[in-house]
Length: 97
Image (cartoon, rainbow, N blue to C red; front, side, top):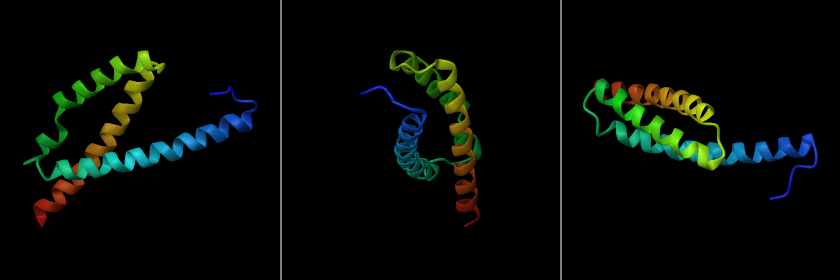
């Protein structure tokens, strides 16, 4: 990959990455929605032990990939919180029928 030649080039490359990230996050959301159907209650949705395992795994993968582990953790915690809220809404909706 060539180095960016200008700020405009950097921004264009970031926009391209954002497009790809949105598609990946949409797929993740589909899987989160599917997971909601397998969980019996809100504690299962929140799954704090699972959250900590996911964050630890991401931190371990971040450094070797060139991503600051603290940045990775902050992003994943925000993402996980948003998806838990999404999943809780789905779970509550299915419970009320």
